[in-house]
Length: 160
Figure 1 (tube, rainbow, N blue to C red):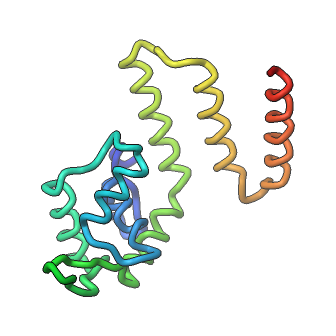
Figure 2 (figure 1 turned 30 degrees about the vertical axis):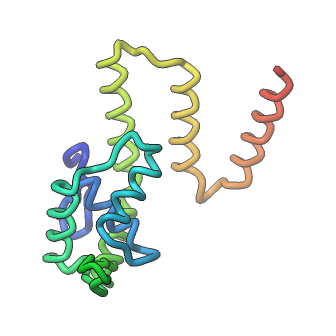
Figure 3 (figure 1 turned 60 degrees about the horizontal axis):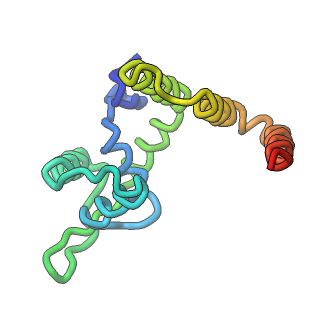
């Protein structure tokens, strides 16, 4: 298994979590570095926003590797980045290793629980496991899973 915050690609090159998120973020729309920072802050509900000193070297490296490119320079000399075909291909390759990535996330969960003396509810663990099972089986059994989860929701609503 590769490093915990690294994600494997076909060519053997590992990508860090932030680089992976940048590729993912740019797949639909070109953005500036600032827009990517704000997007991360929004998606993490303000809990994490990488510093400019962290983000911009990653953008520069991805540009050097021709995974992203500057599509235009905005009014205030702001670079707008877009994903290249090579970047799209790399993102697809990384997504092919999603099961390995899920295992890494589960390892982090276990490490955090250990650090926090297991101070998390059993229900949170069950919900986390449900999500992992769903992602592992969703392509084959989406309708069956949906039915089971809807039944679960109905049962939970009866508790109120």
